[in-house]
Image 1 (tube, rainbow, N blue to C red):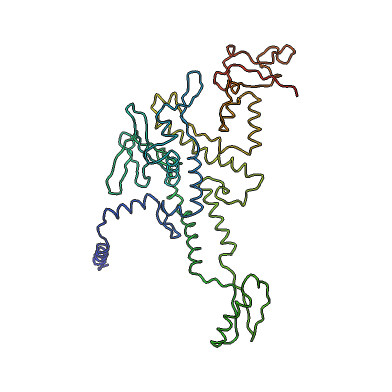
Image 2 (image 1 turned 180 degrees about the horizontal axis):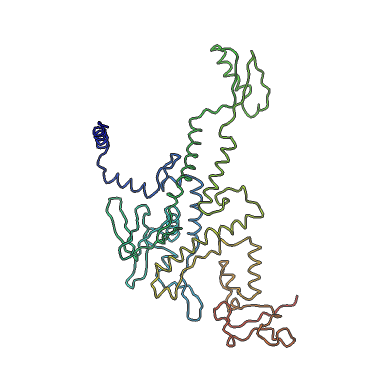
Length: 444
């Protein structure tokens, strides 16, 4: 083509005319949109701010985040005899239990970190340390403005970009990083990116419903006349029809139509079964994405009186427990020194969300008490009550007709009916060094 150079020149000129230099603020906005998500095929712009406008997605993220935040987090120290005790003297205990920084309490900080780890795949906080190198504070970072890079020596560098455009670099040991599900071993998958289409579809459907109600014409029925009504007749009919047949008190009244007039009902388009099913499907889709039961998103279509308790247990074991394991692993490996990791560990108390109904819970405590592996004080502590006192609550019971399987006389009339004394065996109840107690069954 002889005119090809001219075509290329015109295309180049058009690009140059359309291109202009970007300001720093515009580049920041573009980077934020790239990190947060982006536009979906349905037309909805999916970002961290817009995604929470989708009620099903918001409900799931809110449920998981507040549940994790409501679980007490303890720091335990393991003694040489294997027993574990809460370690309140360690500065990290106060950080996890009470206040990680001057602006946030422990609940709000854990809730925000969990929210970031779900939506953006990663939650970040800067460590503050005392003179001995122990972590005594954690400051939350914006996940949209934080990126991770790997240097030549394999160490990770966390780069935080402020709203002013200034960047700060933190080494790997300066950042507490809670990563969600992911395959590269460093960062978790951001739901805003990998599930952008599903979230965008829910946002678009929600926006469509709002626009329909705002702009649509909602008619209960249409009066059809074979001819054209005069202006006075049209006005008389418009005023008389609501007076004669409008309102709940006149429901079911038989209308009298004149001059060949016909009445035709108009259905509500949004009442179409397929539209309603798609709304339910979007809720179930968010449940699949968040690994949560639909009933936690207030969809009770499959919840019954007989299975709702098990659905709650499923929520604790399948949804919350994996996140608690991620938290515990991150705390132990990133907030404790190598020497402390040998004797200390963190733990999320999930007992509160794993409880069943009162009868089932008390029956379980009764079995544990009579079986000899929980004492009264331990049960009362689980229920938030004080100890009995006078060491009475520390006694462990077991049925008197039970014997040690190692006793050569077990099963005979010469069986002792009691376990060996503590000095004869290393199997102490619960590993807490409690002395042997025998339960004398009462008559009746």
